[in-house]
Image 1 (cartoon, rainbow, N blue to C red):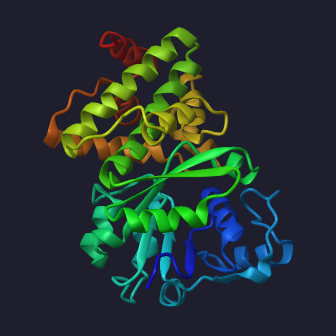
Image 2: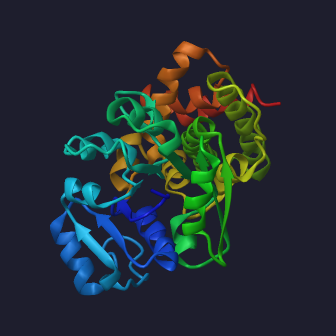
Length: 331
């Protein structure tokens, strides 16, 4: 079977909604798994996602909705995973059908909590998805701008570049350009780390540390990202490519960045708990910080920004003290 065949979107958030819109530009129809039946019924009635990107209308006659994950996975040839990482494992625990013959694409940009595994490794270990059938989608693409049709760029990663190109073709359009890569592991770790650094960027913004300082933070963050990824998965890569640096930049500065906004609240004086309660959507970087910190206990990469964010989020260190400590390491 050629990739992608019948595509199923797995998840009901803003990124899932934006990707579904892209797919319907090139596919006759899609399957769409959402956990809640009431959300599905509202979607069908309103012709848009009632909770996310509600300005984006859909031709619901081209969408087969279901809250039964096994039904969707049985019918689909390609599973596009777009669940928030904190709930990823609980969603898939309901899965009983064999998906080892499916193409699986992760757009999660997170790590499986408790397991401390990137999605591709988890899917290979737990569901026997072969590396040549496992793909990732990442890059500097906020869901809001993709949905608005603004010029955007996505990278599709797969060990089998032919499969990456096939899936990239069903996403591509006039406003969405696609790039392919074989650096699946590097792309996944970079997608997690940029959320961590976005929280740091938000914190220094909230502290009113200034644009000069924020630029130093981000320029040091890309070096820190490169050190970590090159240690965990050494291979040739250009860290200035859009899937690494571009994604870091947009997440660190954009008003659409929930991780930046989460950090800004903490910098403005919110407690970590209060900031989390205030967030409507999940700030993936909160969970990613702990996961990467624990993974790095094995690798021992020098990561002062990660450690500073971890201190603020999990050790109740005051933001101003943690940021001062970070600043001493900047070059």
